Amino acid sequence: MNTPEITTILGKGSAFDGKLTFEGAVRIDGEFSGEIRTQGTLIVGETAEVKAQIAAARIVIEGVVRGDISASESIEIHAPARVYGNLSTPALEIQRGSVFEGNSQMDGSGQNVATTNGQRKREGKQAPPAETVVPTT
Image (cartoon, rainbow, N blue to C red):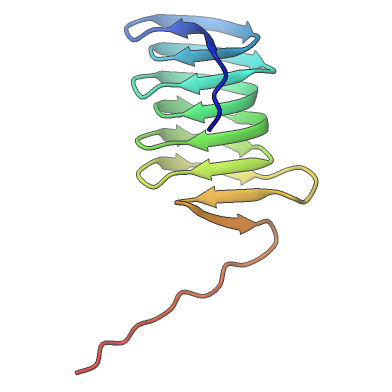
């Protein structure tokens, strides 16, 4: 993950309600409620609680997010994140240990790749069947 330099931080213990627009990268470690729009990167830290409609180029989530999320480049959900809402992005990564409740839509050129628990799955192709091991006695 190549994270751009963070230009603004809403720190732990802070609370903000409203509309947030920015350039570059912003990290939220506190509470935010409202709407977030940017062509940059949004990082939701592990201590953050965000209730918002989010539109950004790239989104990295480690905390709690409630609301619909749209990313023009990618969404990464890292443990111990909890995400409750619908996702729309060309690239989605969900780490083991995180929670996602909602629907996901992968838009784009047909080259979409979802990564879950380190395994990649190309859109439109099924994963191979799981191997069954029967113990011998």
